[in-house]
Amino acid sequence: MTSRHLRLALYCVLILAGAVVAGSWAMLQADRHALEESAKRGPEQLNLYANSLHTLIERYRALPAVLALDSELVNALSSPVTPQVQAELNLKLERINGAAQSSTLELLDSTGLAVAASNWNTSNSYVGHNYGFRPYFKQTRSQGAGSFYAVGVTSGIPGYFLSSAVLGPEGQFLGAMVVKLEFPQLEREWSQGKDTLLVSDARGIVFIANQPNWRYRMLLPLNDSDRSEISTTRQYHNQPLTLIKTRTLQSFDENSYLSRVDGPDGPADYLWGTLPLNAEGWTLHLLRRPLASTEDSRNAALAAIGLWLTLVFLGLFLFQRWRLARMRQRNREELEQLVEARTRDLRTAQDGLVQSAKLAALGQMSAALAHEINQPLTAQRMQLATLRLLLDHGRIDDAYKALDPLEQMLTRMAALTGHLKTYARQSPSGLRERLDLARVVDQALQLLEPRLQEETVDLTINLVRPAWVRGDAIRLEQVLINLLRNALDALRDKPRKRLEIRIEANQQLWHLTVSDSAGGIKEEHLGKIFDPFFTTKPVGDGLGLGLAVSYAIVHEIGGRLTACNQADGAQFTLTLPIAQEM
Ligand code: ADP
Image (cartoon, rainbow, N blue to C red; front, side, top):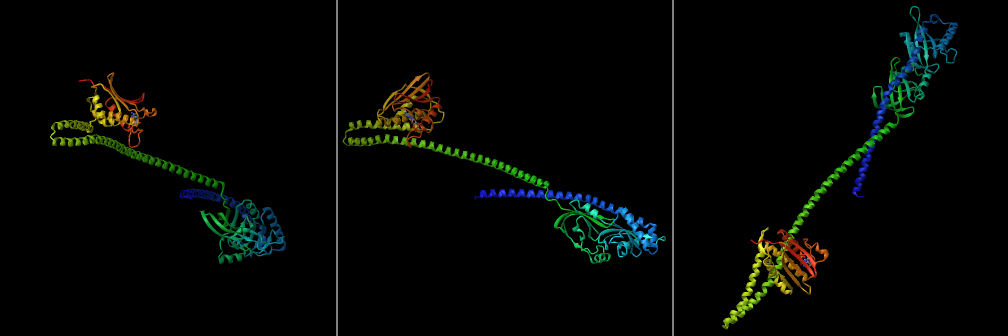
């Protein structure tokens, strides 16, 4: 795996991790939100439940007070109760209990002894039992009324005891009228829903629960005094009380929190709401299992992942665009640099070529010069030796004769150097002197004389003299030398070497033609021969610059240079306007 692949894999993992984080975060937020919403609904429901409990209790609250005013009961307690009175009271209480639909009614005397009860003829009859130890009795005796929730010591059935004092005509305490309420009906009603509903007393002991296994659980640990009080009042009779461990995970407000509960159904999290029931000193609890991730939170997660991926791809897209723009910019800069570098190279190469062309010309010229000068020099040395000999022998006349060829040779050499001087002269560009084209041909031929002779060329010259034109003699000579040298090069291996140079006038123009018998220029080359660097000659022989330079020179002085093929060779035509005589 290359580092590129590794990087790609790393990016993928990062993007995925981001998606997971975004999704979980959104889900957590949605869950939290749902939990808070659910917690907010808690108090409302708690109020409803509290109301139903409150209504139930309130319905019976006045009952013992009203019964305590009954003269029959007051009279019965004023003197020792006879069995007959007791039987009558029992029946009376049974009737009232049936009408009021309370659980039990009982009449206690001033010591707490039950003298009559509505359940007198059941096995759990209260009659004859003493309830002086119950807090509601003590309360009634001291305050006139009492209430107490307890498990019945006789019946074992839990219930809420409401009591009112029965007073004699002078207001003396005669006993207590007690009504007992049981809540199985309420618990059944409450167990319809999925929620757990509990009512705990001031000590945190649950005594009403819509789920039986929650009953008689302690929400708070008991201290010793509580414990001893519970045992004296026998409030929960002999029910075992077990502690439930709770831990608050999150608080929404004072009466609402998320708790981890080690409850009777095993450890679980509950949304726990409480409502104090001040009249009784109790607390109502509503426990609800927080819902597992809902569709809402799943949607939130998907939306968050979608948003995350959109952001990632947008980021990638922008990054890519930025990179592309940067790359383009860099490419452009590189290209510009490349163009600059190439242009520089080209210029150098061009300069080099011009230099080589000059050097080649120099080489050719040196060769021609050496050839041209060596021969006459050798001849002259010999002539001088002959002259010395003739003078030694006093042959003065012969010596004079021998001077002639010497003089001729010197004249020729002088002509040659004279021509070289013109060639070497730097011609100011744009020079337009009036000159004779025929003289230019003479000069060029003179320069090429040795080669013409050596290669035994059959030369025909047909010139109009003088042929006045305006231009630069040296540069025109260069043109002509180029044309002649090309013709000679073409003729080199040909058996018949004919070369013709003509100057003719035609419509205010001089036509100078150079024709050879070398077979001409190939058709496909005709269009290219004036292009710079076009050459068919072997490397080292030709640079392909001669015709291009000639073409430029001729155009510069207002003439034309063309090439065509004729019968047995090529023909170059130089056309120049005829210069008016002054
Ligand atoms: P170079 O002489 O260095 O090749 P030129 O520009 O003078 O460059 O000539 C270009 C080409 O034109 C020659 O290589 C040759 O192929 C062709 N050419 C020029 N003159 C003649 C001619 N008289 N006959 C045949 N081909 C010619």
